[in-house]
Length: 395
Image 1: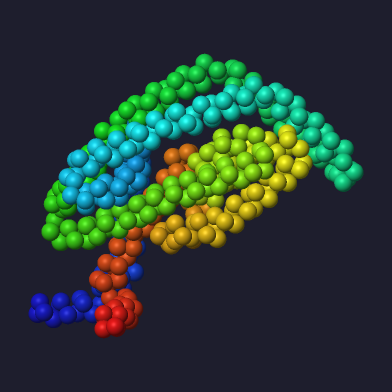
Image 2 (image 1 turned 90 degrees about the vertical axis):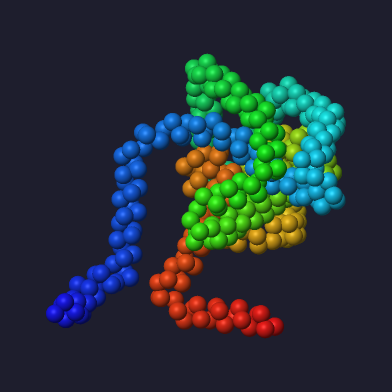
């Protein structure tokens, strides 16, 4: 009787279309996820101390992580020569200190002199830009658009006055915020070498300790996920910094060749901003174009040609050789990531949006591969993939 009732129940529409339906399970899981997120929004005040703590340690952790991925290959190279890991780290630290001393002795005075000269001549530059703008407005080519251009310049002037008044009114608050930021950056710079040391020495122990806490069945996939994320982050950081250094050197050489003032300073700024994909080059272009207007139309044309040449070299040769397809992220996706994360999290979102997205992508891919294996909805695709892997093994 019980078996008959059980068979009748399994053949009912409720069992077939609700309890035994993959779509229903997916809907229920989605509902539970959103319900959990909604409950978290209601108790978010409980996490404010944690968020405050993370905000304090974020900067030194980010600096240490970036330096970790840059220095780790060099530490590994020295360690393979027969030197123990701790001694290898100290050797790398000594090399970095020597390079910093050399940079301070060689470049800092030059950059300081250029910045001081720029600040001293800023009023003259502003006056020169106004004169050139007036000449441009009186050009016969723009006679049909003079009223629109004058309105645009008037709006820019009014906004500049508003910003100046706002700055003067809030000068004390801004000074306090600036002092707080300087204190945080100083603390982060002091802490970063110590955090970096333990990252370099004990990173493998950290991973092993985390995996041992997990259940046995979850250890292998978790280890695979952490390894893939580590490869993604290492490729991104090392590639972006390498490209930024090459771009900074190229801009410095090109700006010196065309006779642009403050060439070294503008080149270093362009290299640093190049770590922001796609948008960085355009941000670096703004002060250079202003200086080009100051130095005359011929210099402005030279600057525009320089940017076209640099972008061609970077896009065709430098970026493909250094970065390749390590992240496998489409350029449109990168633009959306920068815009979204930048609007949500500010400067942190611009710098960390792409590596965070790459890490999430690895986790989502692992979850989707697991779902394909257990759901039974992708059996033909799995058979094709397994057949392709077997044929590769045979070859």
